[in-house]
Length: 174
Length: 97
Image (cartoon, rainbow over all chains, first blue to last red; front, side, top):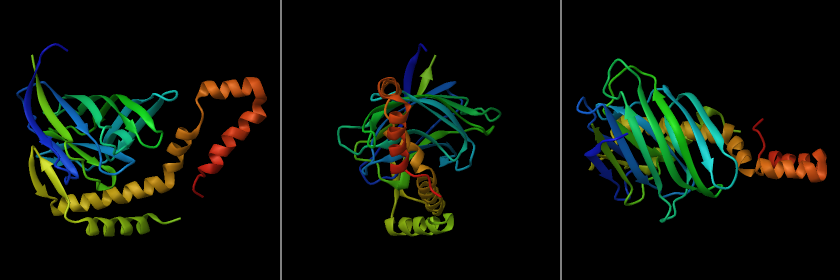
């Protein structure tokens, strides 16, 4: 996907935030990109991901996802979800200071009020319970025909994001 | 085994005890709104329920040996020896009754 990234917004945790949100998606770009680099302050936490409408996370049960769960220690698994209350693109993440979750997601149709919002995802992180390197690769869709303006991250059990955790929203310029 | 309502009550109290919770939107930090707190309680209640009811699935997946090792076990020691390994994983991570 040729083009350049135009930074739109970012949010960085100081260690006392349990929700990180970036907004600013509108009609300027056709495709947006979110990159995040995060870890929880507590061990063994799932990362919960939602789209936002007017800056507020959509808390419906319309999140579908289909990803391959990649593991360095053994064969890969599948993560199929329909009508979930969020996407979870990384599970049981470790809180060690040198083990952040790193991800790039492409966002499609977010600003289109008559189409569903789609994402493609690729991540790499360190799972606390295996323990070992894991990744997720695949896609998700929020099956509501509405305009979404951003992206929300939170940890399971409202664990705080460790200091330095960062989420950045870019527009993909043609 | 706790009911969903019991777990939700525990989650509600934990969120109350954890206040104040903060969010950062485009770099601007603020405390959760009432709606954010309400959703946080629901999310935590769901998390506790899922862990109780379905946590054994992920635990078993993490504990099973790689497929190649399982095939090797069957080839060298037979199905019964393989069953012992699988049964231990299931017994160590029981399905909720």
